[in-house]
Length: 254
Image (tube, rainbow, N blue to C red):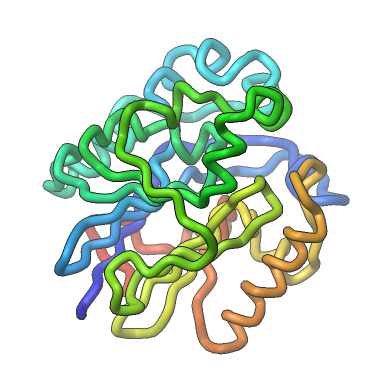
């Protein structure tokens, strides 16, 4: 079945490269991606970007520590619902949200997609229900525990049963991080999210300063490299240089 993929930029952050890649220097531009996948049997969002409160008072939403690590460039009209409406898609009619993980820049827009079913790795959901993990790893249950129907999965999960949109476990960045493989007519695209911040992360194996499980993240990078060697295109999580080459909605990725 034919699948269409759209890239949506939901604001930008600026942060210290050294926190995001060992040995990095200087400040780096960090686009906040979300993706719309349209399949004949349903519509899927992979991640939802920042919460709209981050447009006015990021510290009140994400806390002073996290807000102090980044500069926020997030204007009205860049939240996920507005991005969808700009291409004539109704946020209330999205069927599925696949959250890569529960960090603030990946689940903040869930509140704007009220009728979707959330699909998350079971171990990520369980981590999000653990107050100690939430405190230590920057989770805010108010971003993701909103009353959506939640489907907890274990490992790979084929959303439509035809191999076209498949959740891939890429643990390490967080307990239950997942990426998404989308099969386009031109070949496979893997939306890596924070399993791989930058192209350099994959090429040089230089991890962020703080990850949940370093060995698991190295294993996930190995998996991404294997998929790339097999012909898949890897879409890196927050690589500003790479993102400049990604067609933006309403143009589709082909």
